[in-house]
Amino acid sequence: MFMTSVGLAVAAIPEGLPAIVTILLSIGVTKMAKKNSIIRKLPAVESLGSSNVICSDKTGTLTQNKMTVTKIFTNGVEEKNIFSQSDFALQLACMCTDCIVSLNKGETIVEGEATEKAIVETAVKVGIDKNELYKNMKRIGEVEFNSKRKLMTTVHKKDNIYRIITKGAPDVLLSKCTKIYTNGKILSLDKIQKSNIIRENENMAKDALRVIAVAYLDVDNLPRKIDESIENNLIFAGLIGMIDPPRPEVKESVEICRQAGIKTVMITGDHIATAKAIAKELKILKLGDKTATGEELENMTQENLEKDIMNYSVFARVSPEHKVRIVKAFKARGNIVAMTGDRSK
Image (cartoon, rainbow, N blue to C red; front, side, top):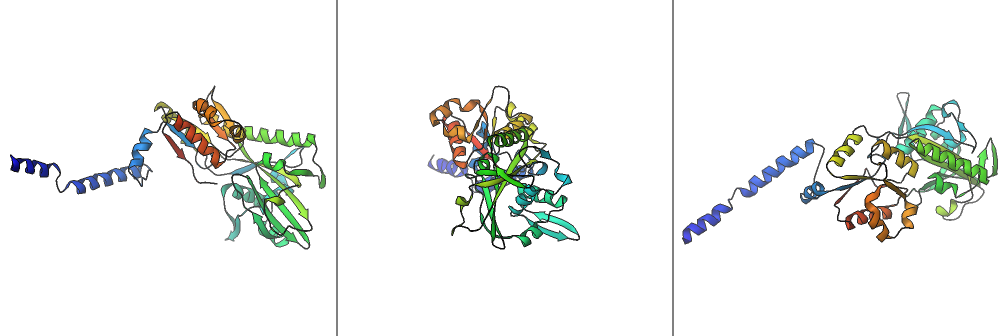
């Protein structure tokens, strides 16, 4: 009996088992890779397979991240056809980018982040050369974009004048403007003009456009340290609206998730109207679903968010801190949450 027991114990765990398991796992990983899924840690497969909520970024994940500028609103009054003129707002926005412009066999090549690339490519179409602009006004400093400020600023110098150019979220940038550039003149930014700008921003957003505002300020002197403190008392120059079409396959994927009992949620830094327009098109936002902005989340307790979290399908103008709160709220209701996105901005 003793010899039989030892024999059975040894036979229960054959020497070839580790090799067999490794081979089987390799075959499984190969099959997943063919379906565009690469897993570093095996337990992640189980977690993903158990997920019943997917929180997704919008730009570059639900959309193609192929921006095309379609509208420019420049003077607080009228919308202009960008392909018929060289626009001052477009020049400013072009300068306030990190894009690299070069020539290859007579063709202009623009390299950079999708939003900035769209701006510079549009500038090229109307005869604006970023490299020439930089020759006339050398770039001497910048305040980098971050998701909390939602702004980017570059500083340029010509002779004894310094030009501060800021671009970013219209609602944020407009609050830092006290004047407006219109028809070659600089005027005080009054309530009527502000209302016009806000209304046009909302109209563009409802058309599913991503909207970037641009402003500037010319000064004789700069502070010793170039930081976000220079982003004040600016002159509003215009709004730039660009389309970023949804990925063709996303609508079907959202429907497959719905049939599998998985809730899809959009979380984005874009304007709420833009987010809602895209979410409706992709069937993420359905009749009766709720939406919220980062500002609304700030005024909401975590307890109240957790109580009502399953009714929300879109969160817009959010910061990384808000994303953590949203995921925690879903998890507090017993959900297993997957988070997806192209990159952290």
